[in-house]
Length: 111
Image 1 (cartoon, rainbow, N blue to C red):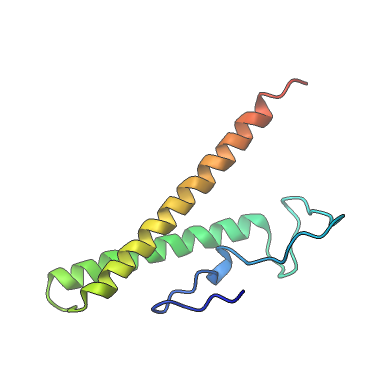
Image 2: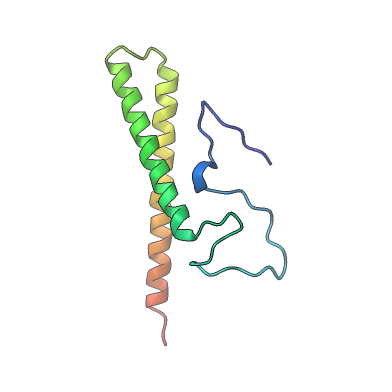
């Protein structure tokens, strides 16, 4: 499945999410510190995703400001920027909640 850019936004840009093929039976998983096939580790991908989120929020803020000042006349593009920012934030919040839940589960495991 190929996902193309929507109004210049590529959903799989800069390590946010990479579409992977289906998991194969017996496929080994790599530890968190290991580098993947593209040469980036887990921390670099998370950092890149946070940077992309910050850029999307900044772009949404700038486009809303430009619309309010009359420099931008296309309301649809402003709303798309706002939705991209909102969805990115919700995604980041859910990832944080899942990671925190996993950490709590591990810390509450009996030894």
